[in-house]
Length: 316
Image (cartoon, helix red, strand yellow):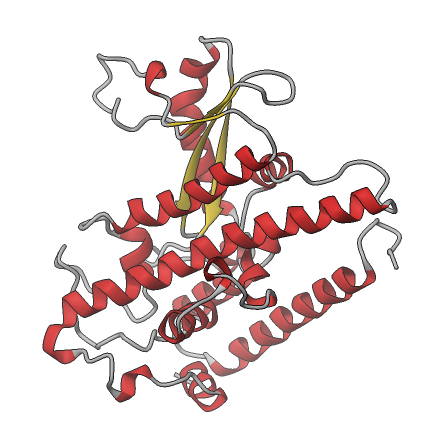
C-alpha cells in the first residue's frame, strides 16, 4: 500500500515514528540537562542529525552477509555513538596521540584527528561502497581523478574522488567528504542546533570552491557528495546517491519499480553499514592503542548498553 506521496505505508509510518521518537527524546534532554547548555545544544544538534535513510539503515536491516553484520563490540560502540553517550571503550582522561582529549563520544577520534589515517579509512570505506554501487548500475567509474591535477597546486594530492564518464547528461566528477555535523570545540546556539546540516553545507561549499572551476574547465560537471558521520546527508548529495544507486523514477506501482526500490535500499544499506562499521572499528582500534593497560576488551567496560545506562547518562 502506498501513501499519497508515493511512499509505502510502512515507510511513512516508520518515518513518523522516528520523528516522534527524536522529538520526544529531545524534550527529555531539555528537562534533564538544565546546567550545561552547550552539552544540551550539542545533543539536540546530534539527535536532529539522525534523519534520513543513511542514518537508520544499519539499524533496520537484518544481519545476513558480512557487509550487514556488526561484531558485538562494533554494535555497542555504534549504538553508544548514536545515543551520544560515552562509548564502552572510553577511559576518562585518555588522550589522543595528537595530545588532545579524546572525549567520551568518540567524535575526536573519528572526525577531528587524522593522526594515524583513521579519517582516510572511514572515507575510503564509504567511497569504495559508492563505487561498487555505481559499477553495479553500469556506470564507468574512475577513482581519484589524476588528470585534473595542477602540478603547481600545493594541494594537488587532494584530488577529487570519482569521475563517471557515462553519467546522465554528461561526464561528472564527484568529491566525497565525511563530516561530523557537530563541532565539539565551538559553542553552539539553539538555532544552530536546530539546523543539523549547517556544517555539511559549509563543507560542501568548500569542496565546490576548491574544485568546480577546475573541473568545469575540462568540460565535466562537478558535485560535492557530503555525508555526516551520523548518516545525515545534504539534499544535493542525496540526489546524487539516488542516481548512483538506481532509484526508480517511473511508475512506482509496477513490479519493475518495486524491484528497483529494493535494490536501491540495498545499496543505501551497504553505504550506511560501511560508514558506521568503519567508524566503530576506528574507535575500538584507537582506544586500544591509546589506553594500553587501562583498556581490556574482556573487561566490564565491554558490556551491553542498557536503558539504565542511557538514563544515567542523560541525567549528567
